[in-house]
Image (cartoon, rainbow, N blue to C red; front, side, top):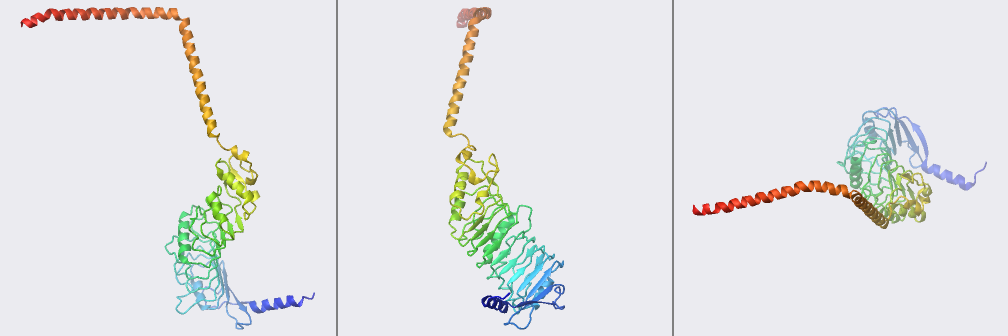
Length: 404
């Protein structure tokens, strides 16, 4: 099959520019790299083969000696060092910058290494790194070294999926430390940030304000209950699926609408609550129906709790939502008046029954009162007699007192 000349010319141009990839042996004098894979990117501009890529996978290293050997690979462009147990990234692992600068290094993958500690100067001497991956580590980020990425002014992608210690437990401390790192590193060129699977329960609205050029933010598979994202005027894609967001408030919606470049918002598989009778649910539903041009699969967003669980939010009617509300205030007043009327009727009936009982048993009641009345009258008479006798004694004795 003959290719058109234009296609052939395009392929030849790309091949001549990027060059071929040659697998070469890693030098034995580079301690820790002898079992790694080294490659060379040969092209017309660099006819001499250098080590341009080093790949070390699942070697079980327990120290960063292999990383320090990279100082002997000054032309390295890509580094993949994964599947080890090095725990700590020492300061200046790529050199002390006085003599060594890995200026060609643009891609670094340090995932799956059980890294717990990253020192403030760990990534010095590699100023042109564009992509850094630290996925699936145990980083105890506490904000004490807030300028960890400050030596990477051209960093465009930062991958921190399941990167923090505490994955599987509430990671509020990681959230605070993350904010300090992002704000202190001044990585203003960052375009893409991955933070999935870190059990983040909240993200402060100011966390990302030092990332003015961020376009893609991945927050899926956390435990976020609120979507509060200030700044980020350049944001294009926002992924927050598989979280615990109960609804979007009017403030959240206004913040999203102000992001004029936003084209993707993934809210799938959140814990949307449709059981309250406030305006939140109806406002959220109306926004999904009329204004949410960038929401992914908005017609499939589902209520997860209460009487409306399992219902699609966009299918809810006003009657559905009113059914979850208590009766209006005027109905409560009506119920209160009804209760008062019923109480008054019951008391009236009880009073009438008492009157009827007294009338029917009036003769017996009179006899009983007369029996109790005699002792009472006799007692009263005796008291009057006794009182009079005492007064007479007092009068008779008065002269005697006067005589004395």
